[in-house]
Length: 143
Image (tube, rainbow, N blue to C red; front, side, top):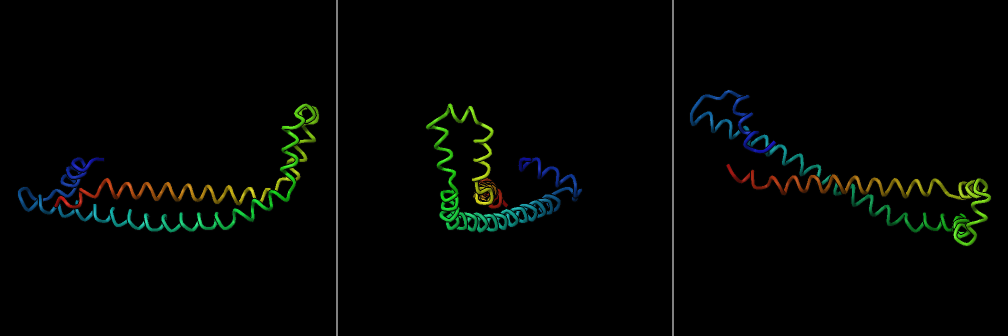
């Protein structure tokens, strides 16, 4: 809802007295609501900024360990078989998929996936709240 529609809705909702006093009262109410929205967006910006930072740091620290676990699992040799002898893989695809599933460290893959997902969601919320504050900054200086 754009700002003029919002102002008209507030003016109609509070049914302030006509004239200058009603306009000043409705402007003060609108300003208070907008300041509350800005404070909430700023709080979300700080929270999601810290969460994004935490998830990225944990992801960087955990990345080496998880890559080492995946490398030691033998999945690389099994996947290289896919490119070196594709005909044998297509002939014995059930056994091949069973060996891939058996050697893949699902916990490590799940941890990496969860960290990536959490980082993306936190970064999205961080950007969304930051853009809200930037786009609505000029409205607060108007009154």
